[in-house]
Length: 195
Image 1 (spheres, rainbow, N blue to C red):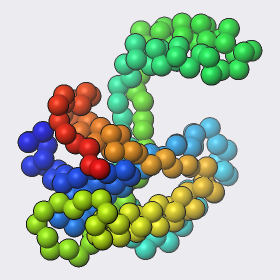
Image 2 (image 1 turned 180 degrees about the horizontal axis):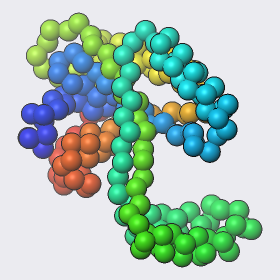
Image 3 (image 1 turned 60 degrees about the vertical axis):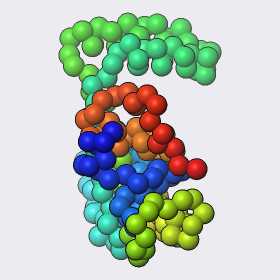
């Protein structure tokens, strides 16, 4: 954790955003991808132009991060099994066949899961040297500004079929922690929550 903090100076993680340095805030949003390769050439061209127009119309910086992780088959298949009750009854018999197909595919090739993230940042003008607590003016201003920016990004990506989901405090910490290559599991006994 100490090494991670030197590389990525996290001061606080709250619901929907984290504080880096004394006055820099970041929100991490997960985006659902569009199956671009399955679209017709005309639709691909339309999506590419719409995406370029969206990026050119932004008045603030946006970072897009594509993260590729190896799929741990046991975890994935276990997750599928837990969702069996959520499936429509007529689809449940196909689950066994799908699980077998996935196992056979994994035996033949390495499976990768790609996740897409959008990072929004905002810098305040505060000179205090201690971390801010929720409820203080700069934290609230950051929440409002990042919420406004998120709305702009959501409106721009919605016509492309991309939907955004904000990360909660634990998911934000997990995202940062695993992005630094530290590991998949969060360290035990680290007090990262910010109330």
